[in-house]
Amino acid sequence: MPNLLWAKSGGRMVYTVPLIVFMDDVSGNVSKQWNKHHVVYVSNGLLPRQLLEQEFTIKFTTGSPHATPMELMQGVKDSIQKAADNPIMAFDVKHGEEVMLILYKLIFAGDNPMQAEECSHGGLKCNYLCRTCTVGGTNAEKKSDKGYSAIFQCGELRTPKDTRAKIKNQIELSMLSGGTEKVKNAVSRSGIKDSATAIIVDQLLALGKELHKKTAGRPRLPEAESLDDRINPLLSMPGVNIHKDTPTEILHTILLGIIKYFWGQTMYILDKDRHLGVFQTRLASINQEGLNAPTLHADYITRYKGGLVGKHMKGLAQVMPYLIYDLVPEKVLQGWSLIGKLVVLLWHTSIEDTEAYLMSISCQHLFISIYLIMTC
Image 1: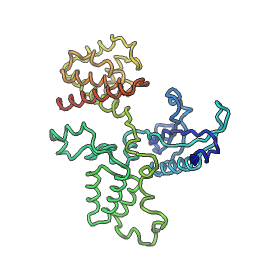
Image 2: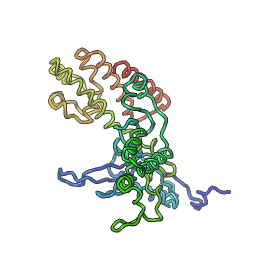
Image 3: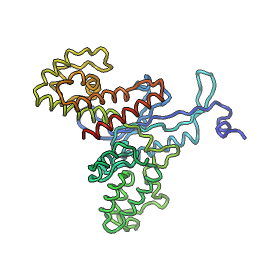
Image 4: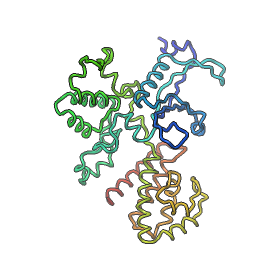
């Protein structure tokens, strides 16, 4: 029996095309006034990195100042699913023949808040703060020695099936007496909060069982629509595990997160001990030729130390241990040494030996965890 794709393609060569889907909220105005709207862009994951960084390879898909992110993603999901069910016929200029293309989603890029919403997660303020696993606990648990150590270990992985079940449970709780507090506690316990069904939960909390009754001025929900149609569409998309398919965005998580706050504390120490002048002199005299980063202007860095951006943090992470080795406590120096190693591992543009790279990451993760546990 011939392969189904062979039969569907009519004997043509079949290629799969992985898509990188990016969604975020942006401003639509040329002026500085903020006019928030959501947009979705798509890139071809088969292209080499040099081309992926070029603007012409990033294709605008959809956008709206009114539709919610999950409503936009529902349309993107339907379009990709339609293209998968009815593959695209194209001409291969290299081999001079027609081929069949099948599209599928590879990863969902975005910043941490947007990726949390795509995973129906409440964000970093939840007790269970990770969108990928169930690491976390109550404040009391996380402040204990055992609970604090557990934060640096991977918890039980989340699954789309389990997330959907928790969302349905929250909708059921919203129909009970005292539903507001019950839903709030459920979100806190699980970290699951689905923006796609938020309007239903809000209406149920306000109207209770009357939601399904036909009243003047408020039409009843269409009979053809079920609760499953209202839940986050990415949780039911074939071939997608949204909890695993949202890779961590390292600009805000590392450069403007860990490094920025560590930089702020280091500057406070240097300023308090009146060592900023020595730091500026050393930064101005250091050889920057080997840095894979923009030039670090010492005067600008020290003058606007509270308003630096990602490119500055990336460069500083590589040179800080050489500038402050005798100006700060030993623990702070050790922290900057680990940050330097972390940045080198994260900003690899080419990985020649995957196994060796993963082993190196595991070792550095262990060192960083031990350092945090011993110093915090």
